[in-house]
Length: 270
Image (tube, rainbow, N blue to C red; front, side, top):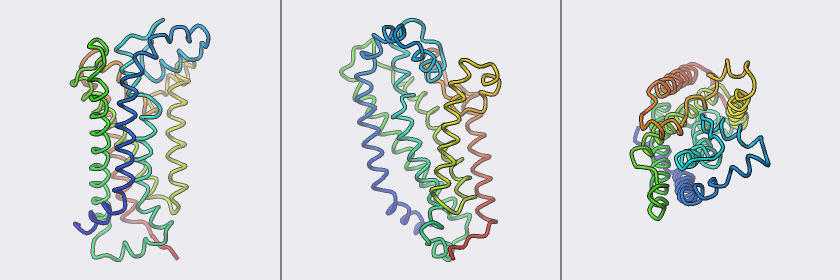
């Protein structure tokens, strides 16, 4: 098992480092700029009416005619750049095995090692959780550093930040678990990545359409963004236990299904 973890460390340490630095920098920058930029967004609401429904879809609550300080801080955690970085890591990492190994022609070598497929899957899972935690932690540090010079009424408390971070971590875990399942069913990494991103794009689109269409609202529970509402967490100062439970259930089902498929399917690079 230690050999598998060493192999994972050698292969992903540099991409994970860049993800960490990128998220920390973006979080620090957005923490400083967003409250100021969004303070005048009511002018954009009048000029571009479509902006408000889009913002409502991302935040999960109606911002009203003017975005408050709390909602501006919540927008930080649903910013497309932040989500893209986290989900790019989840998809990149979780499609390595077995789809990436088959694609590179190295699956035979990996499966010939004196370890079971379950051990390989567990080692990959541990590496994914550890690297994801490191990226989230550096993002949190960047956010707190960006809050140091912010006015007191614009700074988000550490408790609220950690609650949102936990919810975001659960969302990323669910995305990663889905990527594990798609990868276990695929022979080409590019195909696996494309399927996962198509599902995520459909999830975003459904979340947006739910603001206008009743049929979309009735099935909005299918969108992963339905279970990630940082604005509500910041306003209530409480963890959304129901949403966390749903995300945990999705992660467990997808992860278990991926393990079963990986253990039973035939894998050959010839």
